[in-house]
Length: 196
Image (cartoon, rainbow, N blue to C red; front, side):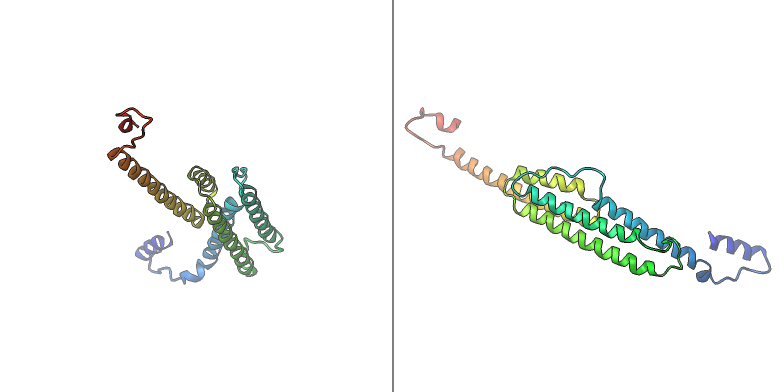
């Protein structure tokens, strides 16, 4: 907008605008960055402090998975409390301490992201049952808000499809073998083997 108006003024006036654009808009750019930082805090809150209840995790490791997720949420609340306790106005672009405080928050959120990703991998690697694996994937998919968490769940979903297709191929091969040479037992009628 500024460049368009400046070019209009320059075209119609004998005195063109000659401002150092970087100094004029430095505060605005800094404020926009501060707003982006706060948006990142809000997005992290969607992932680590959701309002909805946790999905139910069954199986032997269900309580352990749920406890680890709750521990991650408690750790995140600690990070947010750290931001809430700041003694300066976080929207004041002249408050340079924000950069250190936000980087502390951001590093903590990244650590929690890694912890949640590791938990997803741990939970899915311990499961051999395909139906239960589907339940876990659905539960983690409903929880995944951040890109890295979504990518982890998508990767695990892709691995699930590969395992599932492998099992389908094993069953298909077994079916083809039985169809080509049906089992013959003395207890069955002569043509019962192919019907089975």
